Image (cartoon, one colour):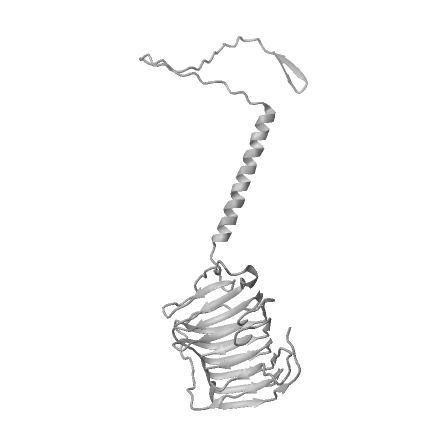
Length: 306
């Protein structure tokens, strides 16, 4: 054996290496139990590559299917499309439920991008809807509906509509202790509130009130705020820079009903279907009561919101 270190060669004696033999086998049992033979399986290199690739695709497919199923089953988060229900016992926003439709309803008639917020009995700090588009090419009953009912209602300190555009607007069965309608233009105005004694609503402490996230982006078929079964309290409700369109077969494109407010402000808005000023598209019907009304700067023009 030779070893070179820094150019010098050293010779070492050849030492014999012992041979070691390893054998593996099954242990001998004290009983005569037959041991089955394992058949030989031969897999070529190409087959092994194919099996590996197939297994990889299988893993990826399972991961994709799992992710899709998980996404489909996830409940909507406000303000995504869906149904959200609040009650007097709630102190925070709940997750929603997916929209459902009758089996026999044609797909083109389904308002699949609806946000429905049920606030029956809830106490809420504020509801802000700003800078959004709402409507649908097919017929809807309303695009924006803020309403209570004969056995419920929405009590609010201040309700404001500012720079809103829609084919039609209506307020009915409501009370606005102070009513302000200024600087609006409409394809027909009919403003007939009833002067009466009304209550000045003011929501006091916000302790325990639900913090409802703002709706400040996106587009929807409809937005519905409903309190038709139990009276609810909201400090402020604001619709600002909201654009609505579509054919309406219900009360109005934007409809306020059974709202009881300390103050209602409707200003800088445009309303019209284009059918002429002799057919009012902006209406405050005589079932709306007020103790004090300021109505000024409103004009009738030929106007169609499309």
